[in-house]
Amino acid sequence: MSTHNGNPDGEGRGLFVLDVDPGIDDAVALFLAHRLVRERCVVATSFGNAPLEVTHRNLVGLKRAFGCPFPVVKGSAGPLSGREPFFDFYHGTDALGGLSHLLPEGDEKAPPLEALAGFAAPGERVVYCATGPLTNLATLVRSGSPLVPRIARVLVMGGGLQAFNCPHESEFNFHADPEAVETVLCSGLDVTIAPFDLGMSATLAPEDLARATAGSQWPVMDALLEQSLTTARAHARPNADIHDCFPVLYHVWPEQFRTRALKLSVDAWGAVREDESGHAVTVLAGLRDADLLPRTLNQCLTESACPRESDEGGFHAARPTRQPGLPR
Ligand SMILES: [Ca+2]
Image (cartoon, rainbow, N blue to C red; front, side, top):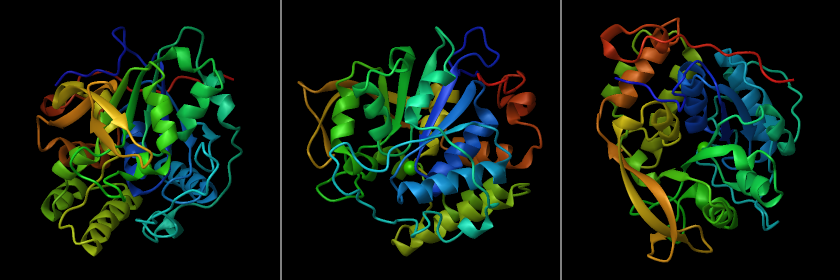
């Protein structure tokens, strides 16, 4: 299986911004980014699954639990409109299904959102991957951040075409800040969307989860994945749906996804619909390999080295993973 990561000359060049609202799904996305993404990474936190103070604290704890060196910037506490944020607490008040006590405690100084631009070297290719509300990215667009012209690609988990989890046939991340979605879609940035539909078509059945975590060396990740299944069942879903992992997996292995070029518009509730006068986006329509997620999780959970460091089973190219020094 060939790898991508957007660097034809390879070796960690470029910047990968992961914009999260952890959240169990976001925790999985962070873990996979830590294990698989070869660019330098920086993480931005956002309100979303819970208030910003909670999601930011979770991110700091998750980084420690995963030994993840990514610097963090602290992002938006609420939507662009200034209205009160909407929280559905799908993963409970701590956004981690009550498992936040498993995370190492501690604080980490984090600069505000504007600091993101300082992590990109001049001329560097930036991939911006958002798995929470799009408020941070929309704020950067509106403020004329020098980061935005360097963004080669935006990867988003959000929106529902036929599957929804919020009122008015919307999906949570888009429902949380529809104005931000509109801003990003109007920005001229190259946007690829992993819609809610994709995650619901690529769920983890209990046997997939057992296979994914067999032999795992990462107990916090195991507990979060198990909790994802427990939460899904509490909502009458038989399998765990882990939506936020897909933009990261697409970044690493785009050839493993079926895509559609669509024109979408977004309404005031964050609901998207196909619309000839809408914004051109790429939508991830499905996985070519149904086993991609459990197999990748298992390799990331069981190998002490990052999976990319070996080529066993043709899983990936034999290229070393490294995190070069971050800009000061
Ligand atoms: Ca999320």
